[in-house]
Image 1 (tube, rainbow, N blue to C red):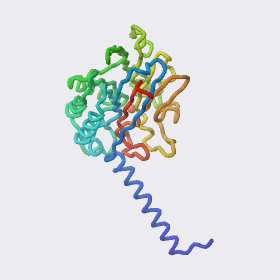
Image 2: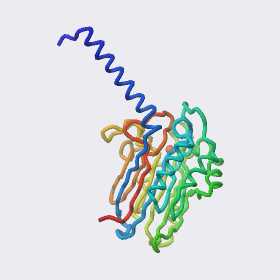
Image 3: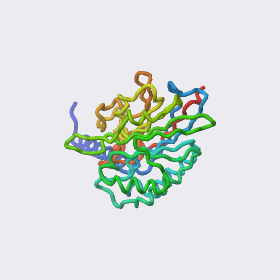
Image 4: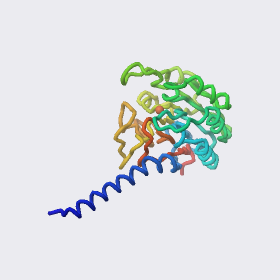
Length: 291
Ligand SMILES: [Fe+2]
């Protein structure tokens, strides 16, 4: 087929226009303006089917203007509270460190806003790799000063509707950069599991999903973030995933050998402020309560 110069130019202009449209969407609209609630309803092994528990999961906010301003966090907190969760968990990576940050959100401000999440069982946090790599101690101090307990290889026994369950918070698995692609964690899964003192069901919070290969059946559900779903995810595939296991743990509800994990696509951006096909999300997990 012969392509005329006019058709070629029209086609090229169309392609450039389309690319610019996708770039504006991925660079501004999806990361900065969209917000979705992704709901999972499940009764994994070990969790009683008649024991309903509603958990709101906030992962990877990476507070920094322009994408995660104080006003944006306020919006997310309001949307979280509107879900009326029983428990709110914050899965780490609280501040943004990417190159295009126009202004930081003060630590006291974002910590105070997350503390406005409301739930009968409270708000609990773990730290992520970005927290460790950049400002671990002041970030932890700000969260605790806002009244949110930070769990690091800790286990707490909570009671809901008169029934107990364990909430475990794992230390970060890549807390220290020891060389290119070489990390050292502060995670202690055996030590954390050893704190579970009875047979009540167990939920594990872990910033990175990679720990899942080592999580025993005793844990009914692992909740993780970190991957941002790859930040670009099309047709269920993410080309770049910060996980040793690639797409296996990139996003969503993963079931392996009867064990369950939910990986949140998170809310913010790390390194490259772009999102495409994986809009910022609040994850709402409804445990038990299945038909
Ligand atoms: Fe992370």
